[in-house]
Image (cartoon, rainbow over all chains, first blue to last red; front, side, top):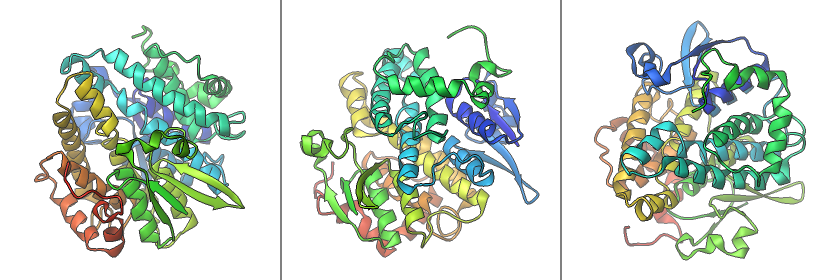
Length: 215
Length: 215
């Protein structure tokens, strides 16, 4: 498998974590978003929408390019069942997916670079304040649910897709100066995840395309 | 089961379709968003974030309140396996979930009422133009993928969660005057879905809280 991604893209990072947790062999292929590589013909032939991540997989002799991080992670969880990224209990599964969607649909879309460019350049708004506002609102909601579901991890005592979504989201929140004081549960789980080798290997700063200078 | 929702909320509508396709018995309980019922103590005890939809379910004698439409729909698909809302083939499953997320995370979060209020009242932008722009961009991308995956429905010839997401999204697109001319595949699938009794019963305009006047 080949993962097309970008070191700091939180959705790329989620897929890296899932692959590392599964111990699935893959090649990480950076797409240089800042240099516009996603808009070139080569990448457009892989993903016409020019977005990362894309997971290139082979099934029955055919190559497929899968997009949307949570769809990719569900695919990985079905193809590589161990260790599972969803609990077995039906309610716990639903809550886990809920937490993942609270990040995937509730927070990240509101602070992606493309949207922030529109807020800044077209609406002449303060794009960092916009991002912080949505990050704080979303993370406060996430903390409230996590307080009722977390053990060592976001849901109970095993890594799930909710943790996979949490870790990159908190990294993004810090980039925008979000006050994480009111989110002790999220910070505690993040620290627990951060000590695990799969999370270390998947970390943005550990990728070959990571840039040393902070934004 | 009890579904807390709002007639025109596209995420509430998705869950209604899923319940109707499954033939699962449920009570639909409207939450009067325009009158602020979602912020009252009664509803906050059900969903502290004040969002719809919430599915109230009982498992092993305990009542649970599930949130996030796609998480709820995955729960329903596991609890009521027939008819399935995901294909069996691993790649087709991934593509189906990708299409659903392109709506759930890629389009809907960018035109929800709360966000449009910020664009209008705080950034003094044209909130309808903002909504149209994101709807057009997202639906063009959805059309491009659907052209490669659709049969009678979004993925092949059976209803999936991708259709469940499509139908309410196109209704919302029309409210904002989106030009749907470039999306013939989506319109064709929408018409096919619209002829099916579960989709008719789940339609926004058929709900007890529907309002006659267009926005």
